Length: 456
Image (cartoon, rainbow, N blue to C red):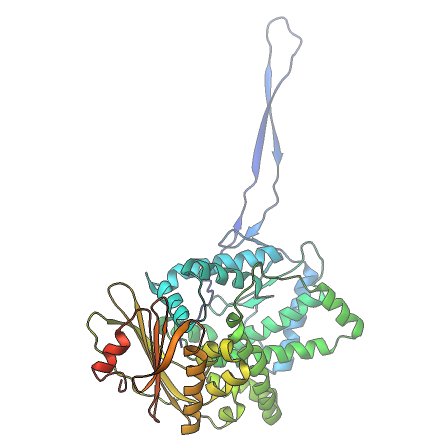
């Protein structure tokens, strides 16, 4: 799986604005035949201290009543999960605009650290080759910034273990909506203490391998949704109406690509379905125990594969040898990747079954001196029928897109070309589906002529 775009906060600090002094000079005429005296007085104006985070965004103070509410919510979460907190949860509260500013600024801060020179441009070029976007790297970055601003009502950070939630300014108590969000995030805090999510994430970050992220994230979100639902179930119809009226109006400034939301469907739609079955078989204790597992995305899409402990096949993939091309990156391909690539052109009803049928997958990316991108993909299926389903899904979902104006049989598979020079090929030998996508013309034919296209 390609590196997930996750905003990470590395350092937290509070900064208090100091008081300022304002001096005035007042001339006082004192009755005297010999002198005139000038007297200086000082007037002090105190500016209230404002706490801000490392990006200069204001952090709101909370009342003692709010602190008691937080304590009560934490006790509720511990009771429902059946495990006590080992450390006190940590919070930062913002206005809604402040929270959105934090999400944007922290994302941009980590963006430059996460991507080496040219890596982001290649990532966007890859999505262009798949037909996911026509946006430039700069435009795609801006879309993701907007996604970070408008896609969250609260968060728990795996690195600094802080809960961040927007609340209304100058209120004495947290409203129902804010408390509901806090229940969800408190579950994540407790999960982090149960499993040590911080260390787990740091290990993925060090290896630059996030293959285990999606499956565990789905379990985490499903358990948090479950406990949140328990809390909301205690509300009567009037409280529910009140809570809904308190929900902030969070909207995106621009229309975002639908495929941005596909991972969220795994986390918040398919994840709860799996957790429902886990809870039915073993209660909340079994759900908590599932946090220690590292389910695959395929297991989340298909619970029977979770209970069967079916994992991905580690398939081999050979590096190709073409003059002028060098390996730049490589990794594994999983069920979520298939759904991510195919749900747009084919719909969920076709993309998810294709993803669930995967045995295993690998990919290798190459670049040439002109920064053209060449991608080789290799996929196995759980059965010959599953492999054929994957072959048909990719063939129809990718190579029959309108941009491929020239498409047909070729090189013992199917071959397509676009007017801007992109070429793509797919083949199925009964054991593996192989795909090649290139941002320039020629490599696919060269691979076939050198007897590598059908055997990498």
